[in-house]
Image (cartoon, rainbow, N blue to C red; front, side):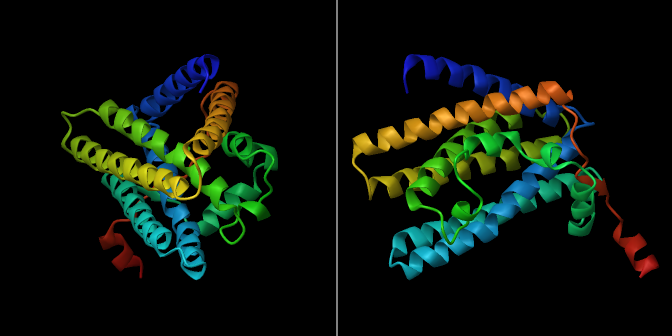
Amino acid sequence: MNFFNNILNIIGSGATAYILASRLRDPQTRPNTLAGFQLAESGAVPFLKTLGARAKTEGDIWLAEKLTIHAADEKRHGQIFAHGLKQLGKQVKSAAEMKQLKQSESKAKNSSPFMAKYYRGYDLESLKAENIDWLVFMASTYILELDASKDFARMSRALPAHEPRSRNLQQSILSVARDETRHAAYLYEAMERRLSSREIDQIVAEWRKRKIDAMFAMVGDTIKTGGNSRSLVKDSVPREMKQLTA
């Protein structure tokens, strides 16, 4: 990464870290932030499982095993964030409620400026697990996992350690950060199995530049919208109430 991109990366990472830490620290925005993480982590599971099956079919048993472990980790991460929400008396809205919410919003507002910028030039069909180029998956996900490990570590420190529930969540998020570091490591090794060191440097630099652009797009959208986003959560229904209404 050249000097200019390095400076932009530091600025963009700093802004992103501040936004995420602020949202997690604030009791008002913490539930929605945890819900977003739960949906992102759990949502990656089917994609990774399909990729694992594809790798096995193609004869890459090593990669298939790594992807299977990755999928199991993401499932556990989703459960961690779901538990964090439960401690706050919240839960993610149902699929039907989320679908209705999306339909009530404009397509432009509902799209992710980050993902649109990061994967610009690739259509949805080419990014499906059945079709995605292995190097595109490895390099793009390597950058995301590597940065996520640092972001989660920073966010854990934003939680008030004197609160028992926050302290437990803090330790859980740190475990997520460690998993993300491990994911980044196997993805880099996967690239080493296919490319020379110089080729890896080139493809990683390309996706790093995309990540920088995507971060600034996300920060710009946050400033434009004032940090407001649609609610992803609803109040949890106590088990006793569920039994009464069954």
